[in-house]
Length: 104
Image (cartoon, rainbow, N blue to C red):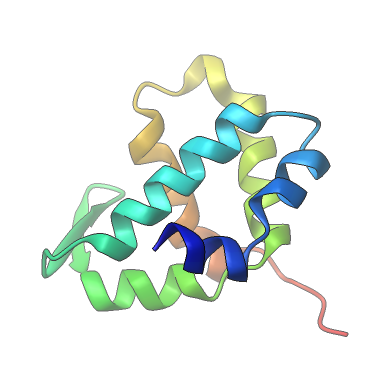
């Protein structure tokens, strides 16, 4: 899964564009691996159990821009985040719908 994720999203490139917040990029990658490897039928997102297939499909639509934005939000709100894994999982799920991405 890690190799497939890194083929779609170049996490080294993301880390270099994210002002060297490699540890946060690594945590996002870990959370994404957990999501895509999950055998559960439902995944807990933002206080609700959601269909795992829907979560995986939604997260798969993300671009590098989405992930960089999540890194920046984590950095900006680190002092307010109690559960980093839950925050990232929710941000990944919500980002596909809430962040407009310009298409070439």
